[in-house]
Length: 134
Image (cartoon, rainbow, N blue to C red; front, side, top):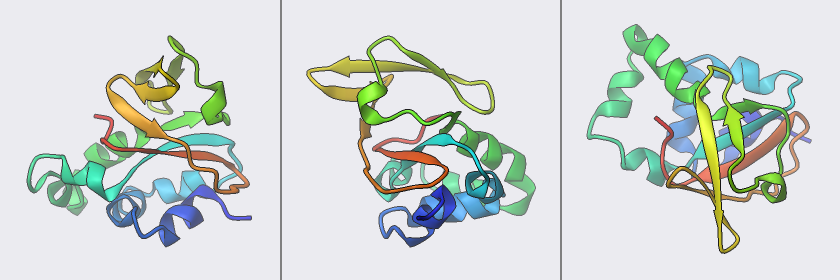
């Protein structure tokens, strides 16, 4: 069974996330014991950012900003899709508060859609998002 970093490394829809995870060194955190809930933005999510924003964040001098952005997607503990309840608040590893919305069986963080991902991960769980949490 893989850890979160290993799952990100091999998913063809998470190529931009993979760059961000490694450039920010959060691959170390996401490879550790955990457990973590990781809201993983897809490549489509990153493409919604302002043109050139991610390329800029990947520059070595912007590592702190990149790490902060990546940490917006990580919550301590393992929270399954079914456990995400309307009105729940989740606090990320960097202190950002995420508000869960559930409407007609669909889950979102604010207005960001969360998609379940049932990969077997030994140090937590990963859900996909269609937008980067800023």
